[in-house]
Length: 593
Ligand code: PEP
Ligand code: MG
Image (cartoon, rainbow, N blue to C red):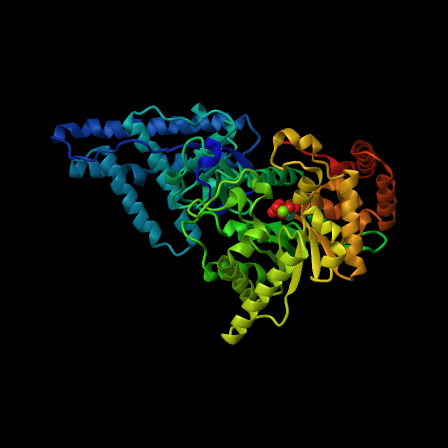
């Protein structure tokens, strides 16, 4: 295990204040890392000097803010200018200045103490205001006061300009001025302990298009310098030291996010119906429930894959039935979704929590993971199954079993599902009368016996991420092999066709939920294969829907036929790529960051 992997993985949920996804090294920044001392002045002759110190600090603070404004004027973003103006006005506010001077003079205390008293007074006044927006504006006073205190300390500002490019700033709090500087210094994003959507800091972050999550409580004490951090400002999540697979998934999300244009969102609400009236149902894949609003906004009609293994990370002990249930009910209870497919956990191999008995496997991708692990750890599995049944009473729920490689596994899983159903019924717990059961088709053996498996389940969901790695014998996480990881490999296309045909002969629906489903380049090929459902990284949905809406099933079938007539991956890729680039130049244009 490398040191990078040995670092603790955890996920924090806060408030997404500025959308977008960024990945980078953490940089811990504390705007107030100064030691403040509060004391009474030795005698009253020191008072004038203390007042002068305070006035100098005000001047220096103003100078700094004006300098930031000057730099900002060179950019085209004007929003922060006004907010910084407000901060300058606070600095010059007579009441603020006079009150502080009065405290120094009357109480014979140092400027730091007097400013603190002024702040306390302001806090009292703001707390009495009914309007929550105005109440929240106390943060502006706080930010101004922090700057003055820092100037008083005489400490040269640890500056955001010392930080260097490409990092993600983690801080207890950031002022709007700090935030404006972040962008100028090419910081990728930030995450803070406090703050909310309407704070001025959030407004500046949005104006400057810096992805950010605030309100994370104590992230500044949990993250270490050089930790790798994902900030998902769209869903309000921060993932620290992500596992390689989640890192990869977020890199994809980031690319899709960059490519989603506002115009696509208009079409994303409409179904993915071709010009000749053929409809594919489009779902979203989620790892965290916080992603649901964004999935719906991007056009997800249902949740086609909820990767429940993420409930297991981030915690010291195993999740209870209640923990599971609390997560699932928030997914299946969303009324804008047609249904939610909960995949039983795909843990094992290198993904299992550290406090569990963990056998180091030489080849975890082919190890004791997913359904294999569940069938050995039956109690753990049944806890989850019970929670999924209970969720089924709340909204339409489908259950999906991962890594099915043979008929015994699906039968055994169904047996346990039936057992938990009977237990719950005996306990008088409310559950749905029926729940659709699906098998993930992601192991080549499952493809070969798809006709048999189809008789055991209500639907298939093809997991191309694993299917491709096993079919082509390519570790999906191995960077050196990415050139061989080819969804358009003729063998992969044949495998897919076989699964779809077997499903349709058995009159069950077939979905795809691997990354291939959201790859615009493969879109017409999948349409031609006549998959019933495509569930994907939700940020990919708008472009995929647009491509389907603009095409016909006939052209898709013709393209597939032609593609399948070639012998090699390279020929297929070149042909499909040329076709798609000509046909959908806009949608295929990838915007790298
Ligand atoms: C897949 O293998 O394609 C899949 C969707 O599952 P996961 O990526 O979670 O292994
Ligand atoms: Mg898989």
